[in-house]
Each structure stands twice: as structure tokens, then as C-alpha cells.
Image (tube, rainbow, N blue to C red; front, side, top):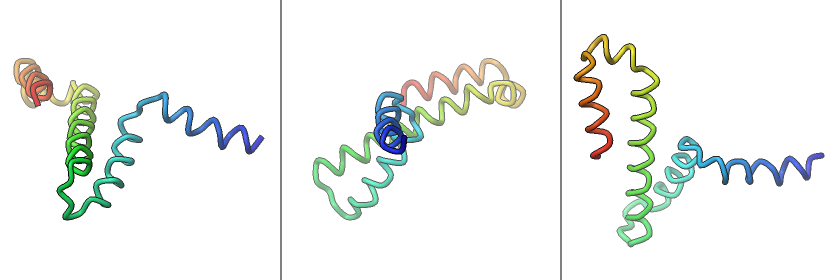
Length: 86
């Protein structure tokens, strides 16, 4: 049973594409790139920023009622458009 779990969990994470899992992985890789300006480290930083933006947009969508109360429907739509452009 343990072998199946050990094999299944990485496969689930791989296919889920979960932003939190990706962010954690990229965050770890970015820490290894401290003061390194190689192409691969710059790619890691860019991917990390993209995933962080996606996570922020998801949070914005999850808290739509609160955002609409504070910024109005037009403000909420503008924030979504801004996140899409970023």
C-alpha cells in the first residue's frame, strides 16, 4: 500500500497543476538562485511571478463579494482586467 501511495502522490501533483504546489516548487528553486543571473534562474523568477499572479487572481475571485462591497462592481472588473494584463 505504501508503494502505491509513494507513486500516486507525485503523479497527482504533476497532473493537478496546482498553483500552490507550483509556487512552492518555484519558490524553492528561486532560493537556490540567490545572486545568480543565469537564464535558467531568470526563467524560474518569471515563472514564480506568473504563478503568484494567478494565485492572486484566484483569491480575488474567491473574495468577489468583499471586493465588490469595497470597490464596486466596476472596480472589481478593473482589478480582474489588471490581473489579466499583468
